[in-house]
Length: 155
Image (spheres, rainbow, N blue to C red):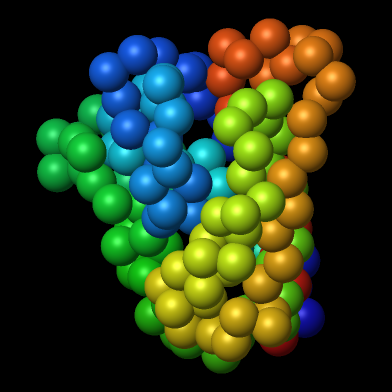
């Protein structure tokens, strides 16, 4: 068994889509980043890479590489499956939390779960996603950004 933790944060800005767990969520602002800035998927990817002892997504998919400009994060996540297989490992489970004051994410969580499970080559029952606010405290509470934490067990 191997355990990893991931964290990601992106600033909210006008003129960008809000994509979380591969779901395009209607909102007046979106996340700024080199790729699609999907903080949930990025945190999950970092947790997997941490469990593998392979650094983080910035090392594997650097934001200085134009090949990843606007990249679909779920597509990048799918590229971790062969890395897990090369180590004789697969997803035991993933538990992730999105921290955002707005918008309401509960209606979108089931699709995020399905998307991540498909990209990672596992069953949706092995993926858990939660969303919370920070009661208007800090940068997420002030609607300046969205963050996500994830832990992953590889077996």
